Image (cartoon, rainbow, N blue to C red; front, top):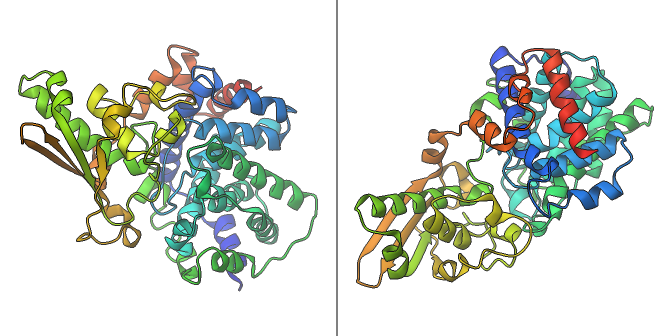
Length: 438
């Protein structure tokens, strides 16, 4: 049996368990939290109004694109370590857009399809190896197209043969480059991936024939420089379900996940200083130099050293560390489209990157990533804080609180519907999301 056919079989016949479906519900709540401020215009210059003029025809494909873009516009959406990308912002827009035009599926079917999509995303990330990302591909755009296609195949209850065709059509469209990070095209990658998955499903249902073998192998080979491990696509499928373990990582900040442990190290330093009873101004005035250490290659995503816009700042360790030291948080307005906050850059330029050559390269195991932040003061004092990725994950994120903050009191019934206890709840959440992009 070909790899494509074997994957199609897993998608069609495997059964996500109750825990996977519950984790899917939590993923929907987080997706709603990160999308709602963009849909409601709470974030200025999000780019969504301009896209509405181009993709405002109300079609499934256009709705999937707009919803994917809106969900990723703040870079506040979930992350998956195996996938090395953002699965929900591609999978859920495709599912919600399709469900809006073809209602009738139960909430359990929706959650199962979502879990299947995340499983496929994680498996693809493992199979294509870290080399895919290192080569310059944006996994959310490339692997995400196939993950969303897998979710749709399950949601539509396709046969194995049609699922294999759909995967092949999706794979031949998959594209997206990390070179676009720091621009509005990055969130558009998520929209494009959701749109391409919907297109692949429509073509399959229309009877457009495609190769049902060899395509996934070709995709993995082309995107890994010969380092693909195709066996990881299938082995131990659903044991455990990837949406449960390692699970979706919900973001505490609207910045690149590769900056988060650096931000938290800076926050801990700030808190320690304030706990001593000394004023913040005394710290900020005395800082002569800031260094941030990390495993070699650990800043591959956070590659912007001198940002010129708020969007570029999301990928800047320098700006993130400075913002956290000044404000004690990473505020949404400091990472929005438009000019930088002029109060942050004078401190950001004092930050120097110092990769730790004694640490294993980040590409070997991103789970071991850390950031070590040191403040050197003018009086000779130094303050140091190390924060690991695992410590950040262990702290967790209050998704319910994140959603309440995003809603700002709007549509209070959505808080209750977001629990997805019934198919009526699914319909209400879907309607709210799709009305937001209309």
